[in-house]
Image (cartoon, rainbow, N blue to C red; front, side):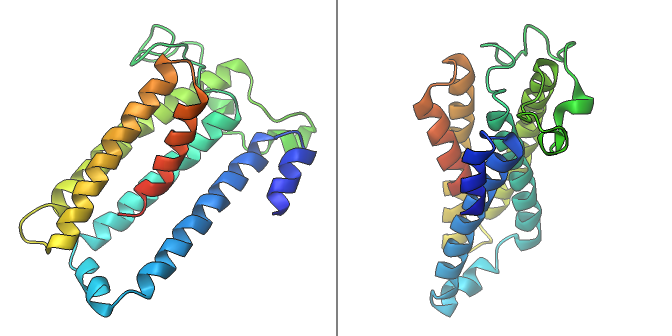
Amino acid sequence: AALGMWAVKLHTMPLIVTSHLLLGLITFWVLFGLYLRVKPDRVRLTARQGPVSFVRFAMWILFEQILLGGWTSTNLAALACGADFPLCNGQWMPAMADFSSALNFFDGLLTGNTGILPPDAQVAVHWLHRVFAVVSFIVLSLVMLLATSAKHPKPVRRAGLKLSILLIVQIGLGIAIVKLTAPLWAAVLHNAFAAVMMMP
């Protein structure tokens, strides 16, 4: 609630808006976790038979990617690479990218300005979000392959299948945001699928 108020008072400063987004998602995930805890013991025991340790690692990777996505969005960097995909402004590795400033989360709080990254840093954060999307895709694909192997019970295999569908749709939405110059419907669905991807 406080972050929502500050987001308005501080003119949508990226640090505040990204924190507001992440806390909203964490609230959603905690509520889902509580829902799972009141399910019958059989459901919880089945979940423990899946690739639990690797899934925890994958959840951390996914959380980092969601953080980067929120930071990209709140810094108005969704179109920092133009409508190029998979290239960024016609290059695989953008030359005009300021990586040293891309993750400067506290700039707005320290300087009193809006906190929005300069254009070269926007390119860098957008490019980082794309690169980490590849890392996330690889890790989540491994989770899906592990979960859908025959040695796991049916609910675990079903969760792996759901994860693979969500992953494909999420990648498609990310590409649509770039190619269609960030339509609102694609951005909203991209956020919604990011939230739901943590659930399976």
